[in-house]
Image (cartoon, rainbow, N blue to C red; front, side):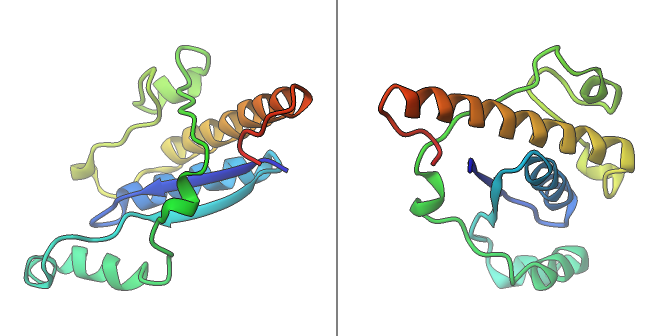
Length: 140
């Protein structure tokens, strides 16, 4: 089974929603997925000054913080120009994108993120099977 770590930072939930969609897409392709957040470095006073930030921090406190065990092997799999769904949802060749001032991403954007997660899992599985056949280890 291919392992995928989706590691994100989100203050008010937009990037968290995209990360969840990428993780969902990777799971749909059969990957074992770890959803991890980056540790918050902002002081509590700054977080408390923004009610949306505080609400999101509290609602995602259960999501584990990324550690070294989550960065074992890494590849970046951008969609390039291969997936029209990404550009149709406002993304670009580097991946799904969403402006933070627009509120939570809509279904079109989340679907593009799921598609990106599926592509990531497929590419990782291909690389892992090629590496294992050659006697190495990638993402396993």
